[in-house]
Amino acid sequence: MPVNDASSRPPLDSGRLRSSHPARVEILDRAPSTNALVAERARAGEPPWLVLVAEHQTAGRGRLDRTWETPDRAALTFSVLLRPDAGAERWPWLPLLTGYAVGSALRGIGADACLKWPNDVTVHDQKIAGVLLERVDTSEGPAAVLGIGVNVSTTRDELPVDDATSLVLLGLDVDRTDLLGSILDVLAVRYDAWAAGESLAADYQRVCTTIGREVRVDLPSGARLTGTASGIDDTGRLLVESEGRVVPVGAGDVVHVRSVPSDGEG
Image: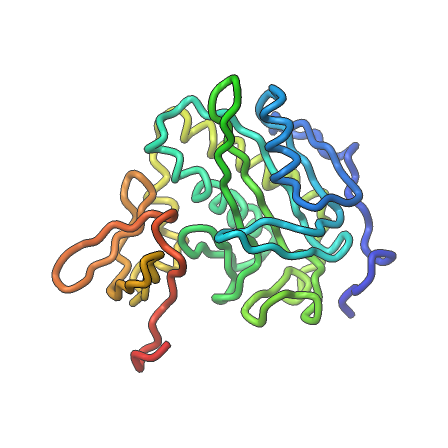
């Protein structure tokens, strides 16, 4: 029977969060937004690999200024501070490699996790995790704040939308402390590879269900682009084949990317 209250959900164990990753993990009982708190620390000169985790996040941030609240101890909601030594043109890969790290950790515990470009991790087309990148200007140069949310023991009634799921709804009883450690381990490896100039494109595309689908891309202007998602380019943009041409679209240039049903509606 799924858990549905904080008393039956164990807290994170900071003493066990010492693994091969370089992170300094701080656990907060309650916070409005871990991204906002990490951004403040970044401006104050905090070095990279600070990780703030909120057991209960009351005003989490998402794309397009969406906010949500996560039930106490039902999810992993955390933010990671990085200070990339890379040009701005390479930054769009940061949320993609983060999503890849989350998906890899989830597959390691038995979830059939895939990626939906650009920010979501899904299982059977239902969102189980999301990623948000925020760039913060500081006196020591630009910093990246990566916000990550994973639905762990969230019940159906607690999920904010119908097309979401959680690990408990998939029949997986997961220790959140172990999962957080695994995500940070994979993230550190993938980030170091990215920083060294390695390409993640082939690995990402293998687990990205957006590739090969007919999609409708909603643009901020109100225009729509419909076509086949054919790949990811070296800058992390989605390539859409439409009317005989290939159109690259960046995550910052879209509102929604939706699969088009076979009957052409939606």
